[in-house]
Image (tube, rainbow, N blue to C red):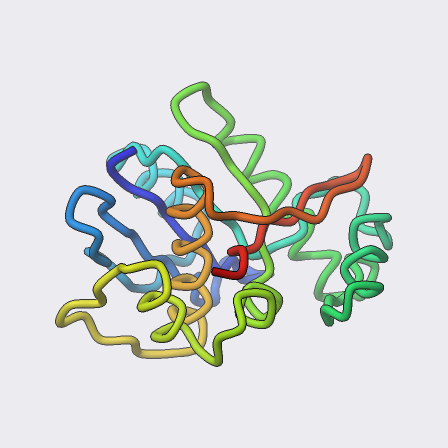
Amino acid sequence: MRYGIGLDLAAKQDRCSGIAVIDSYYREVVRTGCLRTDDEIIGFVSNLKPSVIAIDAPLTNKPEMREVDKLMIKLGFRVFPPSFKWMRQLSLRGYELMTRLNTPEFTIIETHPKSVLKHAGVKNFKELLDLIGVKLGELQVTNKHVEDALIASAVAYCYVLGCVSKVSSYDGIIYLVRKM
């Protein structure tokens, strides 16, 4: 793996979907920002050719409370069920994007940034990056969407290194950074 991408997907295409990229060779975040449309996201991913994309969105075509969501809640993580109105939109967009991006070139996984921080025992994205040994460099973090994308990119990075935990059921898997 050279690149791992984190995507904090917005429910609507006219809003910022935060994106962050970790270069595993240099153990450094090399890009952050906002993309809006599905075509922008697909173009960005296609040009970069990452190994893993971790998406902060329920990746389901059935926006209803899943068993994996119930497990997350049982474990003490606060997740919104995909049946909420805006979560329904997010779920359907996430699933459609996953379907369009689904190629053998890379793996797409689901994550939940707030749960990642809680599970890893850190307070914010900077502590998480320190924990896994990734430098932020001179990049500016401009909003909450980019912060969540950075957390998701850490999950993509850890997916390849084998430092993830997962909460799984028959209807989904949510990846977290394991406690170290």
